[in-house]
Length: 429
Image 1: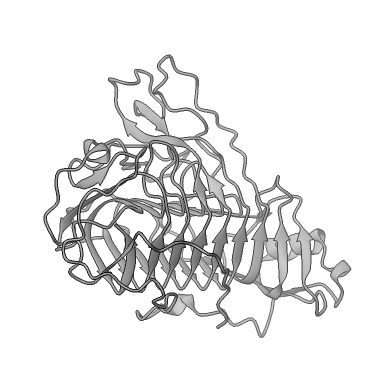
Image 2 (image 1 turned 120 degrees about the vertical axis):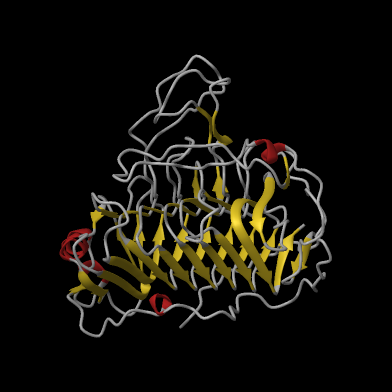
């Protein structure tokens, strides 16, 4: 399997390596996020209608306010690694879903051998039908302008394989793919995108948050998730693909996912060997998820931004007007690269380069924002970081981990979770 790569010159001077025992030293009580400014418990109804709710943040832990983004504690005995140490070589087992799908017997082939034959109309017909979609656009790279959102069927598995040659371009105005099932964490069907580039997609919010009297009340949008791919009640696989310059709604406490947003997924999202650059959204500049397992292997995230501000919270003392059943304050900005929220989900980062991403003003997790609402159960809430580099990410940070020896995940992460393991990785301290 080919791994797409981008080359960037980023300083690793502030990067520390964490082995299994890193971050186990004692840390001082947190500032900023420890007071609950950055948490997003994101509770929602099982039907998943509308957008998710926001919630309070970590009640304790290490960290610092989002504005300064300074370190909230020492590494607790972690070893400093040479900045030239190899990255992008995951030593964990990649699940079967992370292997490229078999496309030897396609349901539909878009195109008849020329770039001109690969047009939006034929693409739309193929995606609407579902099954295995491949392309025959000639031997040179081909770009298809996507002028309307492609609705993927939710009642069957669909594979879209670009053969390393096809780019789907949203033209700065159109969401590219939508898999939108009415149920919640129930669907066994999946969408796989592989060997393809999705660029210049945009999802615009339509459900504006009503104006409120206090300036702290949330602003922006309750919807507008998933610039390039939106999924609800499905399972997503992304293999060796590129996402660049995609946008979701820029403001709102819970909307997000500049390139990808998945919510209410039964089996979650697996991303392997892919590249995300220059994507933006209110939260989760590249990838956002709610009630969605997120496992990312051998992938690169650079220059993605969460462009909301002031994180989110439920605080009647600051906002007396309800939205989504809560007194919402803050308008996002969490998770410059990656954002995960919800019950009974885990996050795995293995062999990844997460560098130069940014959380929004007064928000958290330039590299990763992860809250697990039911950390007290055995159902989920674990964060695994292996063979991964986090460097040059900006924003506030905090660590609130309930069990285990790792009590500080570094300055690129905001997390409230059950347990964390870090092995053979370089994380910002």
